[in-house]
Image 1 (spheres, rainbow, N blue to C red):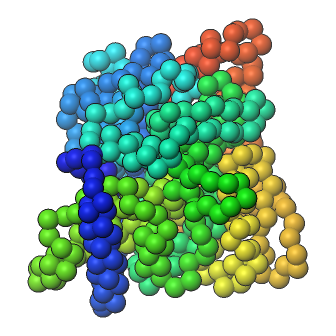
Image 2: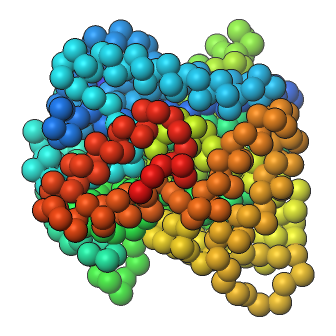
Image 3: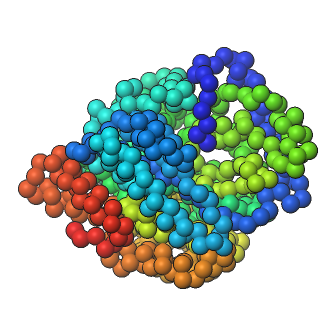
Length: 497
């Protein structure tokens, strides 16, 4: 998704050619999905971790290029803003203890990354939104110098035709306007990739959508921005608004935002999701591969491989669904679901526990979808997603039951607590060792018992610190305490307030 490009200016002919290539890509993907055996193979779990770089005082440090060179690690990549980096972790087969392997790799990578950053006076932080950010940390001066990012910024600005408006409610609402999209870089996440067989894709994706609000509520770790106390997972409204190019009359129609929860339950297969992205969203980066898709498909078929479908993958990377379908030509070609709503941090163990809960719930719920989905229209699933982001473990959600008559809101903690055995069953169904699964689900259960998440911990500590300190001093001390506990890899539910 983070492929580099070689230019940042495009003509009408470029867009026309790219749209034609997208149609060819969709046709090629349809043929692949009809090919016997395509996408079969062992399931796997992978992840990407986005990080902040801060200096000794806890302020953003513009040093991602320099740290990348020092680290000399092909799994480390640059992000939009110069104080962000991303680790692309190894995908692990589901039968190979993928949860423990992911946690171990996270700890190893963070140790190496911190060593590289230390040589430049920097530190790495895994947190949804850095509490010490200031408005002056955003703007053209902070954009990473890659053509892909400059092109993306230029295209989004051209489509917006004006300021990007941020309007987020909370205890201390935040309203401001930005001249560019660099506020998008304030959001750092732990993005989980889950390989799914094409025959099961629709049901698995729907189950993931159903379960995402529950995992998001318990994982929340982004309660502030610029000192304003906002949503438990402020990343959700901030990401959407920071790159929202839509304009128009409030009483007129508008296309869906490029950051959204989706348009409805999947009815048949993965192809409809890829078609949806092509039909709804105009291209931002219209770069065509050297070979047309038909030639690539014929060449790949002759080698027993899958075509890259480069244009479709590039287009997908400019539409940021919270759960996103991914086509990859690696390993003969396969499909994945990318879960993008989980925040970075607080610890490696917490992040893996969040992933275990989401995948376990989705697999546990999947066999019951036929009775559950008619009881929850998609707009109510979307409602659950935003309420979970807003209120975290204090949220009340609408949860479907097979024999329900009407709707009622329930405390999210009660819903998750009742479903934990189902999550354990779901993980067992896909081959996760029972002891491994329980280790991470216990982390979730402890959060429920103590009503503790990264967001709640930050809120409580900041409230205590502000009793006798100015706001900026309290935010800096909050970050130092957070980094100290995070480095120990003790789950956040055990952190002292």
